[in-house]
Image (cartoon, rainbow, N blue to C red; front, side, top):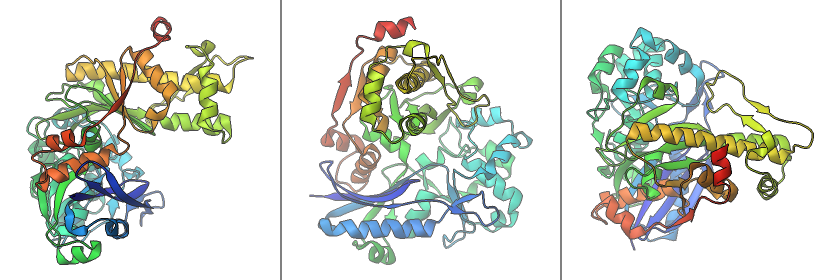
Length: 471
């Protein structure tokens, strides 16, 4: 039996997970993660990269005794996108990792036109208008700590900071670069036009490596830290979203919805044609885990709205209670409508309409699910236009996929079969598929995915399809 060790740095938890060559999650351990307060401002958020590495190492040491460590064939690292830091020649951070949660870059984005019009940035990079993008962090450093940019040897994304700590090699995971808003959508490389306009040297970024490529092998210090042989390679993965896509089994031109606090609707495709109003509506394009493919997508707050309904109306009662009440309400919720803020930037406050005597919290809960599903229908139509395809089914993963009433509602409103992946850890499994390929256990990530096998539960449009079509 062969294994890979996946180090997963999330915003809430950091985890070490061992996956065997049949796709089984053999062991896992986690510790909570959180940002630290920035030194200049109590409202600023930064990540402590050294603490995160030590936590990941503690998790790894805890679970490695459960397997034959000599059969660990590779290590890979996944994390959230955009975040990174300036480092010196030894890889030491010159400034902490600015978190995607940090508000300091909102003002930078608001004034980006003094460097380059936002529309031009969108056209060149394909990346949407999000204040947490890497570009705005670098501009903030340029405007507030210019001496650090002059001193810096490189910019490393957080996955590459961790990889450098383990291997001594500086690299750039391609899937992380694709979240930065500094790459060229047509070439797949850094945009000379964006970087020159911003006054940032291309030499600041180490060579890009494709997912599945070996970055380097463990140094003696890293071997001691993790308790593994020094022959173990560290294989490039990077941005967690791309590996959730691949690990779910989604095919090219098959829409994919990750339903959690946010919903992310994406596609694996060879082309993506976005216009200005698409970017304004929250659209973006990232680099797929497979070089040459793109991931156009849209995102909006989803289960965060459901959690608000639960906290406000149900006082700690279970989802079983909520679902039973929602099931008793007809499509259209007897005229009750919940109009949410789908994005933090939405200027108009959310509202609830149609509340009269006799309407209940169950109406509000079902109305929230209906509003989110109508949003999905609208966004899917936009994604079809952007990707030049017509959906015949939707693949669904994430916590929101466990809600059977909501899943049935999606099938009814979209008029499409909904395939719910039985994979509970699609990001980790997707990264493991690339790690096994990079380590030479499988000939390719696709061959590994075929060997793992992925199963789905299918929900077909049901009795409420006509009622929703009328609405």
